[in-house]
Image: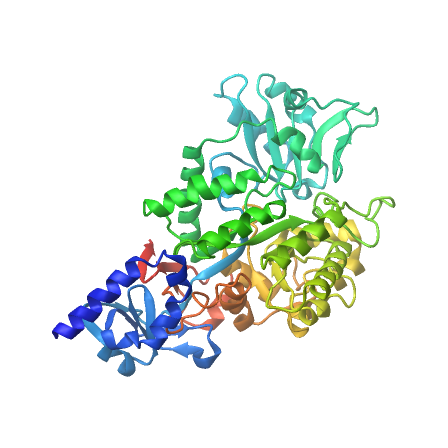
Length: 576
């Protein structure tokens, strides 16, 4: 080994140890390309498989070489083997398929981790199961302590909404809050209603509903911003609990092949904006400092804190480290379909006066987006109903007209239901559609009931129409609303066959595998300005990749045929 090689190698190791410095990290990929790092040799060679790169310049390869956690060359084994440096490890894929580390473009990571330790109602199919779950959970609790959980879906038992009376008799000494699976509705027992001061005369907050019985008594159900009446009374979880939640959630992500998530923070509209910043300072920076960041996280913060994010970006840049990135800002335009609060042009079936909810003051939202965008920040807004999506696209066009053209990558989270002609506007306006295919599995039957067959068939989950119109699709799960599972998410987008259905829902909207893979990798990276570092297995990028159990591409579209065999983050095995 030459003295020059040792000097260069040692210098590079020192350089990489300072990768958390924002200015350096922002230009690290360029450094690799400019100085031909592959001349230094690899410390890991992956070979003898089919590597799908998500990079159209070389979409498939047989081998790749990695050094210091970044890819230095991709190609066939004969072009890679000469890069083996001293102590180089080798990973024989034995014919398996490798894909880039999946990116989940929309999660609520710490909240999801907390939910994993609470009452889980996701699989509940009947009223009796609902009640029994609560009865079992409250059995050993101290009087006065809150029973928390969620994930219930009333569509599973015919649509009847739960009421406080279901659980009052078994929870006389404990306040209870159980959120619906979509996070836009929740059930409180009578004890919790009293703690929150919610009675028959309580005024509803703007953008929310206190559901009441025929005799004007609260039933226990609260929708959208009305939920903050209860949430503000629930004791904040400790820093230790949130740190444990991060580790639980990160391990689950790695099991599913997810190496990067876009964390949208606490997912209840109306919560104090401070919570997202507390998670950043108390949880994420702690984990990063002590080597406990298992995955990469891109953080989005509440829209009303745009000035604070702008200040942080000016001080530290977008890359806090190679594991934590500052993303942008998120707001809400409407509620959800399951809670009958998504905002539509036409009313819900059987509810002629219900068009859904504007959960934000639209003039105020527009003003904040103008200011945030002028400051150079990325903006995304939750919109599910067709009217909410149309209003938001109009708003984005107005902001562009006012602030000028630049690479801003506006996003819309969910974009589930679109009015005729709206899908093409995403491409025309360069707005990213951040969508969650697995929501379709829960929504198909209920959408037909709530908005009618024709509206649901022609305007729901228009993935292929969005692509045809030139839009960028970024796939995610919205976990814990739906399970974090990219392999299933892609299969859902390809097959579009909800449970119990024999045929696809709107088959013309079925995607192909290549597009589905890119929506969970390179397009997802592009959607949050991380495409220079992750999203494809390209020279200079971080070596995040997944080995799957598939021996053929056909396996990807067959239920149960593919699972994650191993997940690598920065060239290091992170699962199992």
